[in-house]
Length: 230
Image 1 (cartoon, rainbow, N blue to C red):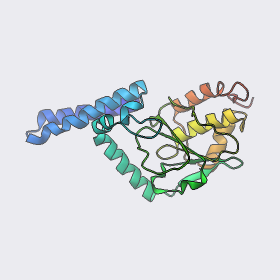
Image 2 (cartoon, rainbow, N blue to C red; image 1 turned 180 degrees about the horizontal axis):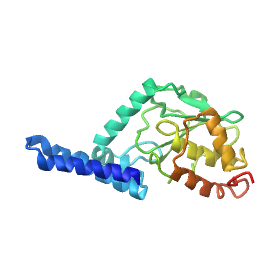
Image 3 (tube, helix red, strand yellow; image 1 turned 45 degrees about the vertical axis):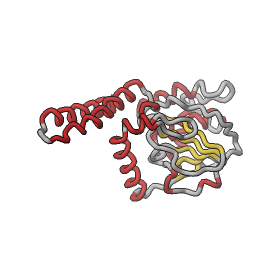
Image 4 (tube, rainbow, N blue to C red; image 1 turned 60 degrees about the vertical axis):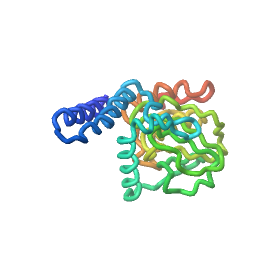
């Protein structure tokens, strides 16, 4: 809900500027205002495709990207600044597994060691080369996962990189479910603890955590996670 309110307030502020300013270029503000309305709806209905129209192969729609370009440019610039100055590792491996969590690998690391890359960011184009199996499962930042089941097979020997923008909420949500499906952890809490031990900032929002807890019990008919260890 906070994202919906945020984007609606931005749209209202930009609309007010169009109404109050006398500058002839003021109507250009209608573009970001419309984008904010669309993004508010996307978050209200949890519709990741309304951000950039990203497909499973990582390609984006020119229509949706152009419509939301004012916000996307801000998002991409913010990501670059955070990536350059962040002290957090680009990727972290979960000990005892072949699962890596990380940020959008535009600036690294070398992807040649991975068999599979799972891309969870609805707002970021692929923009990097990967010769093996790649799948985009676009989801909104801070929201419960809409797409959480990859079509590519991920087994115990598969070296997989899971990333969103910063490798935090969406990545943690997906990896909890992956750990459950693979039977690596026996409870949701164990999966979360394993993730936090190796990538401390990979924390889910409350809505993501509720959704993952509900989904995890159905993650696998054989080895799904229980809610707790009790």
